[in-house]
Length: 373
Image (cartoon, rainbow, N blue to C red; front, top):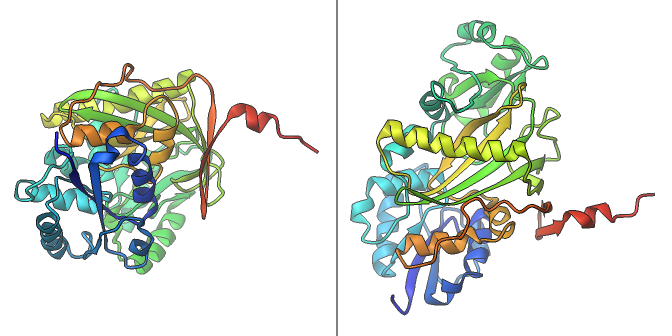
């Protein structure tokens, strides 16, 4: 073991990277790690608490320049490990993984290539025993009525969203009632966001509970599995009552049969994916699971190779700090594996998030004790 490891954390100053860094610093190994930051946003990077920070080109908009700049940082700072925090960076870095001269902790490139696109991931899972929402890619406006005729109309709605990776949140997502809604949304969204009609898919509407699942693998072995339920999106809408979003401002740990089933489906989804692609799971996988009208938890997407912005909810609920194990596994250090893989606390805790206020984890009893007038 070295006296000091140099770790490059990308997107520093962004919410997800700041949260992850905070939880890294709570790990026992943090005293042996020197963190260096990078980001393509000159405003966000100004929030970094690190001593050394680098402004880099966007991996999404200028991949070649991002790679060149990142290689320079790795060489200049003698980086031992790079931790990418965005889909675009995960994809860009894997393409030159052997040229980096430092550790990465990423899934196989074929997994990244076949799952970052939500429709590709759906096609991997649709003929398996993993529940998924029936989904079709939109290639023309004339095709939309044909697609809607194939789908069951659930609570008078269908689900429309952008399938391609590279952006956070429920990018381009909206529920629709008919083809006119779909056409209007696609036209307006594409004009403002430089997307095309073929970037969209239409699925059956999923009306039930929304769970977020996190899996940590090391060379094929599942080390940790965690879950929470998303109760309210950050924009204030309800995931069950017509809400559109992804990141929560209110969530809870949950250990009922539905959450257990959702986590099991997430694990099966990775088993199916890696079996079909003939790969070995490695690194971090974050999946959303939303219940259909039959109560089955459908896997809707996977954020592969990077931690989500809500990583601290996973880190701070349960017995194990995922960040500590992630860092040790990524650096190939010896660490005792968690004594239990499924880190699901029996008692309910709530995670409350909001702008300019640190994440708070409160016990269920605290909410019950509030005096009502």
